[in-house]
Length: 71
Image (cartoon, rainbow, N blue to C red):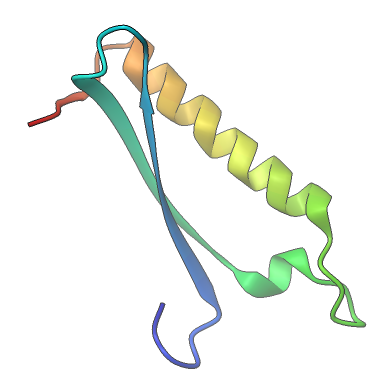
C-alpha cells in the first residue's frame, strides 16, 4: 500500500495437493471504504464476498490450466 491510498491490493495463490508446483494467481484490488460502514466499523460480509469471488476465480484458472510453474 502507498501512504494515503485507500486501495487494498492482494494476490491469491491457489494450488492443489499433492503437486504444489502448479499454481494459479489472481491479483486484485479494492478500496478499504467498501468494507466499513458510516461509523467506521468493519463489515465482514462484503470483504468475504470479494475475497471468495477471487478465490473461485483462481481455482477456475487452475482447473483450466492457466497456471504458472513454481520455481
